[in-house]
Image 1: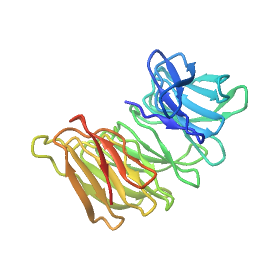
Image 2: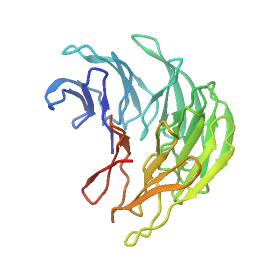
Image 3: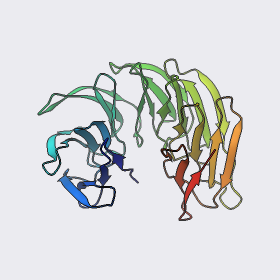
Image 4: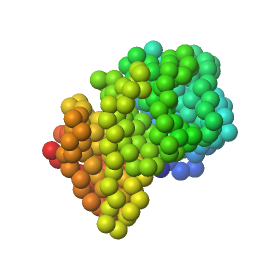
Length: 278
């Protein structure tokens, strides 16, 4: 349940088996490999020479990219278990999820320092998203979505009345997007938590569950895309009008991506990868 990242030079950073993070060229040839000491989650590229990755054992690792000399720079044990990936704020602070917390970490070169942690009543199984002003939007299993300040203070919380297995997204407009196990995609103001729109997913013909486990993807026009357990791939305009609903017949938990030409790429449990053009 991970996603690869791509460096500016085209190197694919793949969280693979045997506790390894691999660097692959466009043809899939291994360029380097780093053992991070645990099962790696989705990596994040902070710069052409810096990659951060969480492991399921609650360790944050920094990898220095240097061709064949690529190596681990530091590790920091943050908790017992993690299912989330780090995000990097504009000021360079790293925020990541572990156990029942959102944690902020500062990279200090050869080491890292924990700045604060924001704790909620139940486990967090998703990644946070960070707005341009540093406000983090966090889904949890306690039935609330939270807005957290850059200093780790709660700014708002919104009752979804459902656990969240869907990582949130924040657009450049300052709008936050997050799904829940009740099949609702919420669009809210990231700074205040004010709900702008709620979109309810519809069950599929053979898959009545509507849970949203996939993360939303927002393009430059403000259109949002996501999939559901009902097997549908949805696209909605900022106005809330539906752009499309494509049935796949099987659960869609895959996180969507946009190609260089603007096509939406998303996989389904039916074994197919979909490319959807506008």
